[in-house]
Length: 126
Image (cartoon, rainbow, N blue to C red; front, top):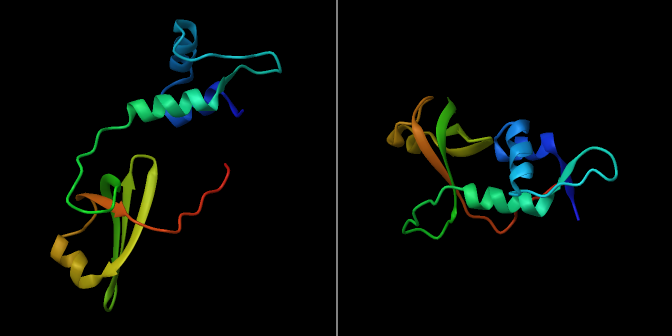
């Protein structure tokens, strides 16, 4: 079973270390300090993250991995455009035609959502 330090759990949950400690005190999270620093079970943090995730509307498209955010960078050249979206803690980069970027009016500061549909998703351990 994976355990996370309080600071790691807080970072993943987007809250302060003190909030995680309060959740431990209130019983919302369990903690262990038998083998050194206080840790919380990774599966409990994952459940809290699932509960806190915003309910996104299902669109009439098959892609379900939707990342709403704000455009932070647009680079255009001959026929292509690179568009970067900051979606919470996630940075999503899309390559599209320059025409599509212009038709959508994409520029820094515009609210946008990146939808991802892929049969090949790379996962690494952090």
